[in-house]
Amino acid sequence: MRQWIVGVLFLLFSGAPLSADEHVACKQPGAYEGYRVEALLSIAKSCKVAAVADLFYNRAYHIRQVEKYHQFEKLLNKQGGSENIAYIDAYRIHIGLAEALLSRSLTPHAIGALRRLNYIYEQSGEIAEMRFRGYDLLANRLQQRLRDKSNI
Image 1 (cartoon, rainbow, N blue to C red):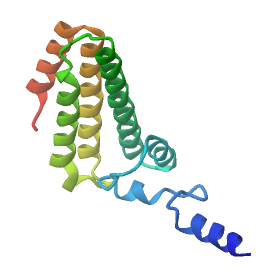
Image 2 (cartoon, rainbow, N blue to C red; image 1 turned 90 degrees about the vertical axis):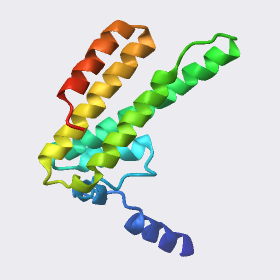
Image 3 (tube, rainbow, N blue to C red; image 1 turned 135 degrees about the vertical axis):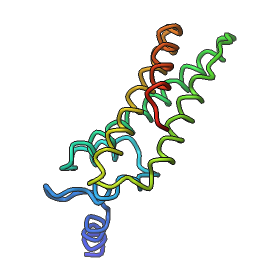
């Protein structure tokens, strides 16, 4: 009986959507720290506002990319290779700054801020992936274009 009560309480207070309702985080897109990739994807699936859902998908993708880059770095270090992987930190810092600067304006109704942050996630992720694959010249062009268009 005790296990049953604990189970019911866990389901009630876990924060996971139990029905087709939105997750609590969909209404506060700025408060997402501490969620794992799986939780972010689950939250994104439950969000009714497309821009908020895209933001949570982008956050999950960002975490996966950074993990992939760090795995690559560990393998490279084990084999004795050395490569400039500062782009990983630049990618993380750029996303962190964008999140910090736009955090106050992130609400489900602030579609402009959400679109802007989603755009930054997409462009920064693309730049980091190009650098990871060795296409530094293309990444530089895209990065310059992003700087020219940026208001941040």
